[in-house]
Length: 333
Length: 287
Image (cartoon, rainbow over all chains, first blue to last red; front, side, top):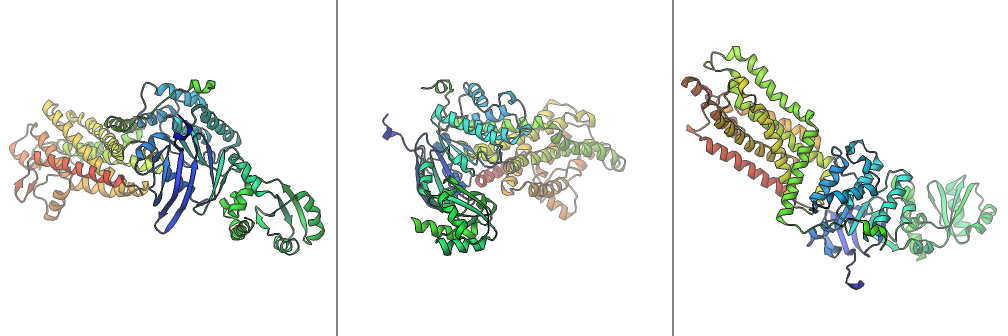
């Protein structure tokens, strides 16, 4: 088969989803290639989960179209469901059943040939390291174990596309990295396309491509490398004696629009190390600490949404800065 | 190809057919049974209540009622009603599993599977009905203790009625469960429905010669039409005087017309099917 005949894993075209007067998703378009690991980032309420719900046929689009594994999510709903696996943000295991019983139930709901169920179960349980706990009720599992079991279950039926909504949220770093290992193993073994949302910027680095969503729209979509290169400038974070005075001084004396993010006066500037001595000499506001860093995905996120993902979560000072940062990002483009 | 690829057990999700739907119904049904067996203690407590009515209420009030029951033990008299109430309680409680599945997230897992919502709901109804009917059968097994003979025709008929009632009651519970989505509200509404249904059904008293208001409420109560044929079935196998039978098993009448058992059974069945259909319609809406 030639490459051109393989349909895109996900193909979204001008997708709109409204709930009453609220437009949760406002005309989103993107394509995910087969075998790609695609990251979906954005603050809470940006429309990520709504988009996933439409893609996995749990919600109908208000307008526009979406195809998963080549099937339209509305007219070919059952075909879409046969080809996708899901790991939701909130657990959906039956905690009164054992790990084994959960996987078997899933396999039977998906109509898998009973002859191959035991072997497949064995393999999935081994992959996530739960084969020794298979006969214990899920109730006795830790949060990380439950999440691993959910991933094993989502993969039981060899989905072409696996949707992961915040798969590593609330897990310890060790479990998070092992979950990434399974995802990669699987993606290599079966060519599974991975579509995931995450809050962890360091994890977004593992994705082949990232889309950042904000207020129902995709604001940018590219590889992590290209996104970081796009920010260009270094990030400077200052601890100051008076943040408001520092913001004003930066604007008046250097022509820099800074913002307060995670408690530090933050801005981007070319060649950050060389800029710091000037800052001490000319700012005129007490500086208590300085950090200069190369651009990270955090900076990318901040540039396009006007807030860091952690501030967006806690509803911290981000909102106050959003409009300004948005204007700034627009001016730079 | 890497070694990993060669090792993976390939599986395929087939297209939806009536056979895959039947398998889904069976899977959902079996899950409820597995959970019932694993969680017997909780469900068994719902069996204690009917037994309390039967043995405590039945024995305690016997001395008061001895004169009016024409020599028939009060326990024997309320036995058919207690059978139906055991099924009513457990059927309703089984239907709550749908509300808990929603609350604890598992419902989502079933909703995204490539099976129709009709199959999911049918599996739920059959699961609840199986559990409820089996509770009824446990109570039925105690027939000998209250002077009801183990006659094969009686037992077969009683099991048939219990299964039918179990289905209808569960379908009703499921209809409430797809309408009221919070577990707490569900429990509250259930209490509000179950006890009036029980007290108005004639499970504890004969349905003739009631005050007019009570007669009206009794006749519009669906449970009446399960208790009455059950009592009729039990009394036709008892060795009691004609007078006692007329007093204790007068039968349900509509404006003087005695409603035949078969019509009553048909009503219970139709009601069950209608509620099942309504639940499926409500459950199948996607936003």
